[in-house]
Length: 239
Image (cartoon, rainbow, N blue to C red; front, top):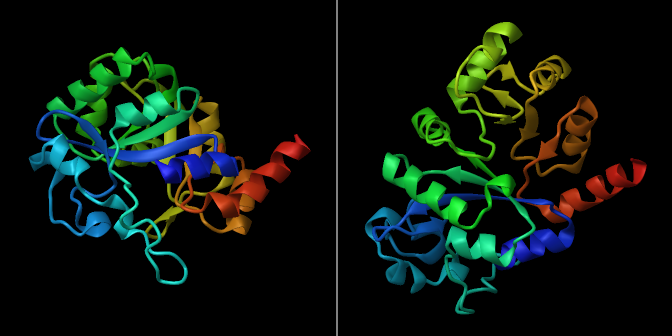
């Protein structure tokens, strides 16, 4: 949560995060499936209760530029998605569903609907089955495209892609996949012609961010909001 607050202070206008489902049915925020890297415990979230997850010291995994751990022992806990949505009621979220399965999908949709947050939560996943389930259950918000859908988008004519059922609205991609360049004006324009927003990840170089935005990218996902802040300040001032 301190990271989210700091990102917003620096000017981020969307919070990107990842989620897993605990053993007792809570949607918890974490990139990793377990707590080893950030809390030093090999505890898998899908096998842990929320009270066990709460007891972890999530601050100890952060190492600063001097090699120190300034947040260790400071009470940093792994939050739930509900806590984040409630604390930041006017902020848009991009949520990557890491854990596959219908139980995960049903739980996160029920949570978002209960909080009436669908208009500000984009749901994404690397699992096509997860996104098809989200869309098939009538999710009212936007969804990203899974990797197979991006591959189809690249090769299919626009008319053919338009005809596909249960499509997402957000193309969230790296600049390249192997030797295939995704950050090209032609591909971005194709996405825009189809009404799709294009966001690139994970961009930490301000010069690279400027290049992508000049090319037509709609958004930048970054690990370093401080580095990106001047880029967007300049962009907004120009517009």
